[in-house]
Image 1: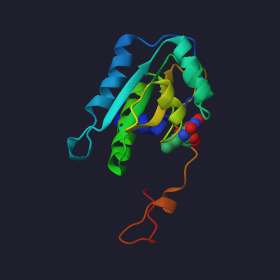
Image 2 (image 1 turned 90 degrees about the horizontal axis):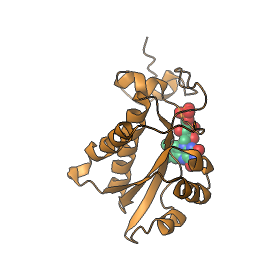
Image 3 (image 1 turned 45 degrees about the vertical axis):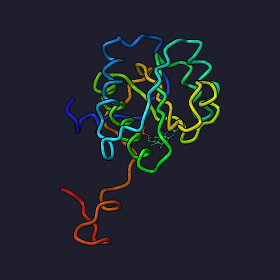
Length: 170
Ligand SMILES: Cc1cc2nc3c(=O)[nH]c(=O)nc-3n(C[C@H](O)[C@H](O)[C@H](O)COP(=O)(O)O)c2cc1C
C-alpha cells in the first residue's frame, strides 16, 4: 500500500483476533511515532507500550469508550505536555502509528481524549503531563477496510478560490 492507499482504506478497528503482532511490526509502529515531526521539533510526547494481558485488561477497564482495549494484542498510550501545539503534535504521531500499523494489516483506533485521569493514575504518569489517547492494536476480526467510508461529499468540504465555491474533483 502506498501512503494514499492506507488513508483510503483504514477504518476504526474495535475487535481483534487473539493473535500476536510480530515484535518487528510493533517496534515499527512505535518508531513511526518517534519519527513524526512536531512544532519546533519539540517532541512533547511519551509513548507507553502495554502488552501484558492483565495490564491490557486494567487499561480496558478504565477506558470507558474503549473497553475492547482489553482484547488488543498490545496498546500504546500517548502522553503529551499540556499545550495546544502538543495536542496537534500528539495527534500527528497517532496518525503515523495508525497508518504504519494498517500498512502491515494491523488495525487500531483512537480511544479517549485528553485528559484521562484514571489512565494517568493507573500508569504513574507525572502530574505535568496528560494522556491524549489509547491506541489498541491487533489483527482485525472482520475483513474491513475495503475503502468504503462514510464521509461527507467532496463538495461539502472542498472549496475553490473562496469559501462557499464548492469544488468536486473529477
Ligand atoms: C479525536 C478522536 C477521538 C476518538 N475517540 C474514540 C473513542 O473514545 N472510542 C472509540 O471507539 N472511537 C473513537 N474514535 C474513533 C472514531 O469514532 C472514528 O474515527 C470515526 O467513527 C470514523 O470511523 P471510520 O474511520 O471507521 O469510518 C475517535 C476518533 C478521534 C479522531
